[in-house]
Length: 217
Image 1 (cartoon, rainbow, N blue to C red):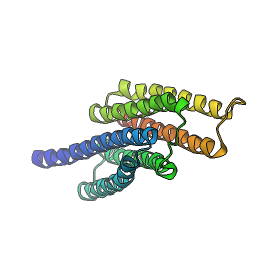
Image 2: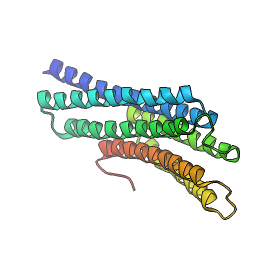
Image 3: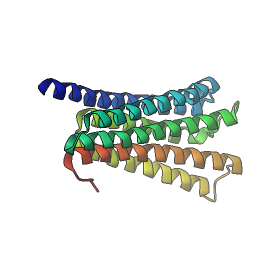
Image 4: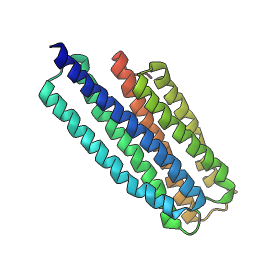
């Protein structure tokens, strides 16, 4: 029985490691998509777009593995909760990859021009930095199950929300000289970053629930 339990625990640990790997991958993708966006780097944008397929494949493989574990082991209580939570986290991480993919597509759409006006470069550097930091912290939350750190992710998301609000205010201000095309592009890009962070918060919330049985406010 002890050997069976040990093998089962190894499978659970493997699921957790894959989730951590996914979090690192989507952190790299948002970093690369930001670089491509600000540098009008078509090659890097194409790499991000193609890499999203690998994220999707890893998510599908992980989900299939989790379902197989549930079918074979018929876990109950905390083990079942961990596996169901992992399914939901993998979906959130996959969506984070999608957001990076969408940002890269804006870069490709506007190439050889840069989608971001020079005066907003610093804004998007900060937005990209916050997004990557949130993703990396989320990976640490998955790995350590640190509930205090999970709460920090939500607070970090407040910074992203503020950056997003500031961006929209700039685009809508009477002094704005941006054309309709640029305004639409940047509104979409800002939304993609904001949603990226929201999915990271969702992952952190699920880890908190896994540990405590409750969701934080």
